[in-house]
Length: 246
Ligand SMILES: Nc1ncnc2c1ncn2[C@@H]1O[C@H](COP(=O)(O)OP(=O)(O)OP(=O)(O)O)[C@@H](O)[C@H]1O
Ligand SMILES: [Mg+2]
Image (cartoon, rainbow, N blue to C red; front, side, top):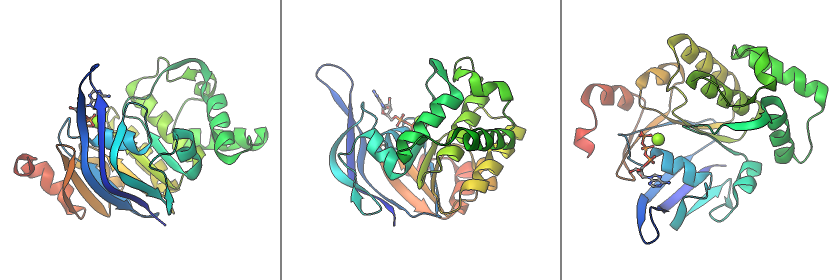
């Protein structure tokens, strides 16, 4: 059981003729129950890695292979990948007018499981996670992310994560924009559900990693993983910066 990325190369189209390579021979393995942190300077390819794994249509895999628990998902569609148990929380969650939070999540859960969850159970689960995350009740009926503050959007991503309960989750800068208390609330919520889940946390700050302890830390630079280590690597980066890896 693992999420395995082998020699992955990906590119994005930047105009009618040109492409930019965003991932350059990335090798990575995460097992359920493992927590991986991905750090690296702005523009180093962290979000591209997350988006490519979730098969965002802007990211084209040029070579390499991705397998999820033995199944080759290199060419799978985003919904197939979601059904197989991979979840991505976006660095910039999209706003969708007219789509209510609870309805949206119930439909998402239904399409992953093949059956819409029973409404009573759903309302119960929804409110329990909502309470854990200290999200106001009125959010259930609000349009997805519309008018949400930065921190509210991030909490909503963790609400999704909690309800969808995937096998592997990539959290792209889930800590950015959270105040100190919200960071603790989000970390506590993640810690509660992380059992048997492979977690990949993309972050710029060691702080969240004090609450959600990673087993491994990887540094991205220029579309590559240039260094992997244990959790102390995050602390070291905070002191030394990225210069020596660039
Ligand atoms: N869809 C896209 N179109 C054009 N360029 C892109 C696209 N996606 C990524 N890039 C470029 O690829 C590089 C890597 O971007 P990416 O978003 O992966 O960086 P990042 O490591 O997540 O940075 P940050 O820490 O600022 O979030 C950047 O130079 C970015 O401009
Ligand atoms: Mg990013």
